[in-house]
Image (cartoon, rainbow, N blue to C red; front, side, top):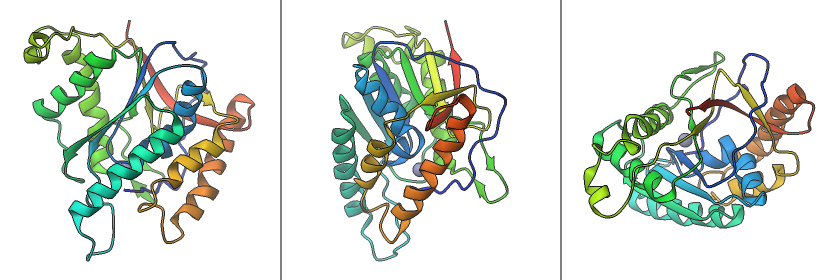
Length: 252
Ligand SMILES: [Zn+2]
């Protein structure tokens, strides 16, 4: 669902954290979250030659205010739109789980599903959202699925994907454990890194526009105005035109 965060993240002065080489895996709750939160960064990583994968934890089947919309149809539409946006961004793979929108929980099953992709992709960077971010200013509180997506992703990484006693059936199938060295979290109140996305604002917006069911009724106009404004505010912090804000953890 297209979520509205009216104010940009506030936080301490930025520190520079260079992007690691190697594959990256983005894990978000809803079909359009990755584009809104980190579309410029994902596009930049692809441009730099990194293999970038996307895992969406819910099928977005409540991403509409129209009571007459069929939820199964909405999920099918969301999948098509996610694949179209991924193609535009140049992503290497897209996986969408069948969890119902609004019902994402931090369970062993969801952690196993994330660990499975982590063990397949063996990412040097996992990008998700900050599970501690509840209140953005006084006009918005963060969607439960977003907070849960961040928490379940962190918990799938540690203790999880790197430990041979977790999800052992995956190891029996030939996969190996994987310790994720770096985690980036968007939609954060405590950014530690501002990623320069100058030159990638257009592709971020074009990828978001592929989520046609989510940006209809003038909502894309809102994003087209708000996202560049937010990126310009972040960019000013590091002296570039556009940037996205992240809390970055280095785990090794
Ligand atoms: Zn969302």
